[in-house]
Length: 342
Image 1 (cartoon, one colour):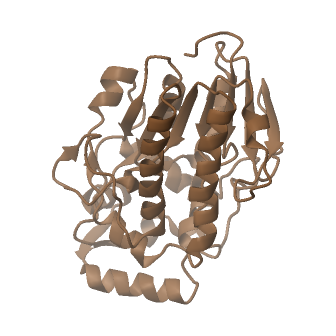
Image 2: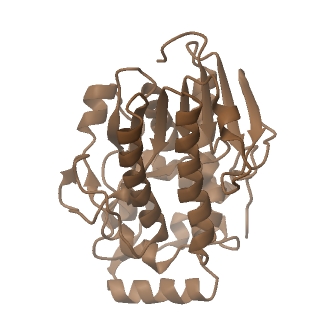
């Protein structure tokens, strides 16, 4: 999928949920000569053709230009979800760190930058029909995650204007899951002490039906295939990535054999806010507000221009993820370590 057989691809955030899938897929690609994974901590996992560098994007001491020199492309995936109680900390890593990546790509003469944006970059939108990539990307201002993703969309607008020779691709995936990410995502969003075995159908006789809670999911390996396809020299711009069907309480109820019970938004938000305020829940109430407002995405452009189609349905993705939670599934990298609580 790349321009030559001697190509080297650099991946930031290479040990996380998306990074492990992207690195594995690239290491199997005969058109990729080598992969360099950048991460804050070196993993115990190293697929073929892959080497590693320890890099902290929050530090201005990192020599990213040296890491990027000679690369055919940089795939920028690095992202910090926590600490949610300290937005200045995530801003340093996610926004200032990403801008350092963009600047280093230009300084090192890398011809291609593939950036991990998100459905979270989109402004509030419809839940009844899907929107394409032209939908505004101003995010939901109260949620740090959305605010940071939207800010980087504007930073890339300026970057593309100032560096027209760099081909920029922006991936906007839905919520990404795989079995190996279950422990990491449980800790990020549910907290270290949320027992994974609670994700069992027999323990969930009812599900809260919250108005507006309708989102899209995607298997991380399917997203990785889109990142690989984005290395083609004729691809540029933004691409929505999501699986089908959309996930709502009816779908979850069918999966888990649970009965939906209507719960007002205000009641759900109050409970989340209380748990977050007591540091019992890492996911903030502002992120909950954003999720209720995210639009559904139309993925026609990814299908027609990338030739991309997800292999996993949303139902299959969630079943795999829930089984991973029950089993404490993980991988041999620090963010993805499998840990079973309870």
